[in-house]
Length: 387
Image (cartoon, rainbow, N blue to C red; front, side, top):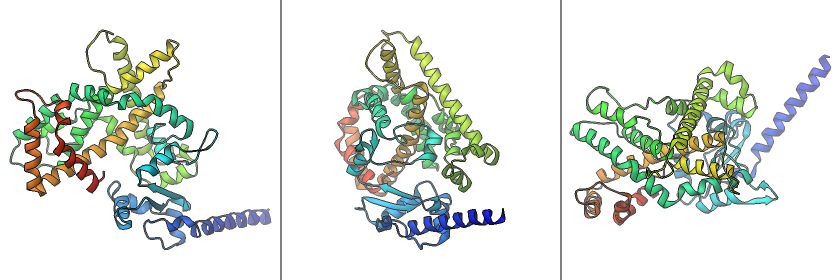
């Protein structure tokens, strides 16, 4: 018995050493990325301890800048020597998303098990034919005219309230990051699935002195970011396919995931009930989710159109929040920072806005499209400070 256990232990040790050797001699280390000393500890935990102890995506941004702005790919080590490649080139991203090795198999596997566990199966996490199917169905909601109508229906009201709150507190100090996060969240919630996160309400309460700082208290968004918080033990469970143990050892993240799934299910169900009650002759603007419900209805009517199930819709709505909220808020912060820092640019941006703003009327998407200098300014901000 002892001899058998010793043999098994020896095999495990040999397997670990072989895995370590494969990791250490991998040609992927020729790709730019954070410095690696090839210690056994680095093989076990990778760069996870760095990511865990710094603000979201800050280490990745630092490694990218250290590698050089023209770097097309970046390599980092994950838990137990797992290799991760960040594709930083637009053509490379297209190649990863659409290339096939033959048949139905995708040529590149994303391997985003942790992210898939949090936000479900959406465009960010799925591969191959499923990605192609989702992309085809989701394509109409990214149509320029669809986005214009959705934004025009809600953006003026939200912006009026936001600007009024800032005017009420004029001359005081504010936390720009939390304010931009609140603004972006309410816009995405309304445009994507007609959900009011009441984030701008928090800005209004701050302006009146009812709260000291702006906080995002909606259980949906709180549970999303709690679920996204890194944990060494959680990454270990995911990599070893032991996710069921979270219920016992990671109660906070497990409960947050339960709340997240429940809240998004409620949002989709509520939106669908509103969609069903809606008069077909109504001129009320649609949210993006309504267009996906249209595809469901067409499929049930015998059309050849594909559609997403309610569970798949939940995954795609989570993906919109995950991919759009922080990125939009970060762009707003950097844009305001850049305007404050460069006064000559501020004057040109303001002149461009005033020149094309409608007289005695609310701003519309069509008006913004005429602002060429503002458009160039935002693209330069994105180039210098990609979110």
